[in-house]
Image (cartoon, rainbow, N blue to C red):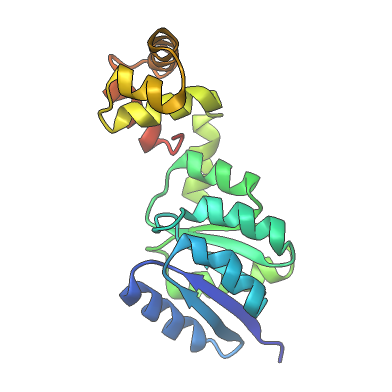
Length: 203
């Protein structure tokens, strides 16, 4: 029997341990590495050469979507699955652009996860159906890269002056970017715009 070699990236040790135990019970799966930080994924994957990488999104060091892009570039044969609590439509779209072949929510049954892993091994893409529908109905992220950067800075309560100096822009330019982003998201102010964009996974 071919063993499927798996790398687990999850910052919560208890969740990581439970996942490792459940997948090991499957008989055809072997956990070859476990990491708790996003910036450890590529280094450890290069050392252990897993067939599949299961990545959480929210991790210290770097998030799972960024880690997925780097891993896909370095080790294109490794199938990447995102396993997350955050079913935000924008995350799904971004994940697919970063080379991810599976996107599942953490509250899915363990048997479903094992099946998803096996399906990706034969070249299938596996996406939580409710998430897929939500992503399709949301459409594309309307924000440009620069609007996202400015809005993300504003989300943390930075002033126009602080955003301008951190991004090497004039205050007027920052004001323009924020104004366009607020209009696009039909928000009343920049805090609401940032909240909407965050909920949709667009920041």
